[in-house]
Every structure is written in structure tokens, then in C-alpha cells.
Image (cartoon, rainbow, N blue to C red; front, side):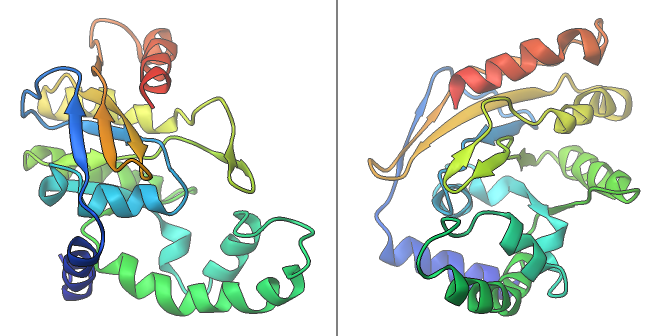
Length: 217
């Protein structure tokens, strides 16, 4: 855990109102994956700062946002402002470069997992398995942005590949806990988990897993 991350997280805990957590079922303590709704920029912040298990959680982080050279293009395609708004020319000329200066050093200090979308994706899964091996947990935001402050109804499902890998390497029946974040009312609602079944192929059960996660976020 980097010093910058430690300082920023500590500051947030001082200046931001605390959050409570409601569990649908008691947590068994086994290495797990928590899948929250994004809740704009607040979701990742709240999960890292106030989630009850945050000291033992490692979020998946978009690798593109950790590279200053890639951040401007990412910001422009990630709906950071309403398309066609009056200030769009100003935002387009300033926000991508401000983000490129601020975000990479912060994210590189986070004890997370860089997520790659090319041949390097194997690094993402290897790092994830290593954290699970240590008894730690993962935080994965499965929603896919579809526009300004909106997401596609269907969740990403590529992250489910971590389940058969965890079974093969760790003999772990991985559980995915849906997490609903209400940053206005300041609470987490952690739903009942859906568990990977090693007796069934991932393809046969991925819709069950996705539906269970979607119902809880």
C-alpha cells in the first residue's frame, strides 16, 4: 500500500461521513469477490475507504488510467461530461490532461490489480489469484458505461474467468458478493453470494452467476 493512498484514504475517513453495512447473510471469511455498482466516482472511493473489509480488498483498476500517456484518450471516451454540453470544448481541452497528471500516481499507490484488455490480461488474473492465495479479497465493478452517468443493463462477464482459475490453483469455490452502494444514504447492502460450481462448466453457469450479481447491485 503506497503512502499516497494511505494519506488520501485517511483524509477521506476524516472529512467524509461514515457508511454502514448491511449483510444479507453472515460472511464466512473465505477469499471472495465483491461486485459493487459503480455509483459514479463515489463507488470506488467508498469501497476503498469505508467498506468493512477494505483493508483486505484489492480493486481491479483499469490499466489505461494508470498510464499518463493513455489517460486523455480514456477520459474522452469514458463520458466524464455530458456530450454536447455548453462547456464541452473547455472540458475536452482541460480535464483529460488534469486527469493524466492526478490519477496515475494515485492509482499506482493503490494495492490493486491492473486490468489489461490485450495479451497482457493474463497478468490481471495471475495477480488476482495471488491475492486470493494470501486470503485477501477482490473488488470488481462489473458495470459497463453506456453514456454520461449511465451503464448498460447487461454486466461484463469476462471477470468470471477468475472462478475456474481459483478452483484449479487454490481448490477454492469462489463466491461473488453483489454490493449495492447508496452514497447518498451512506450504506452498503451486501447481498447473498453466488458461488462457482466446479462440477459445471463456466459457460453453463455464467448466466446464473451474472443474474445473481445483477440482482444484488
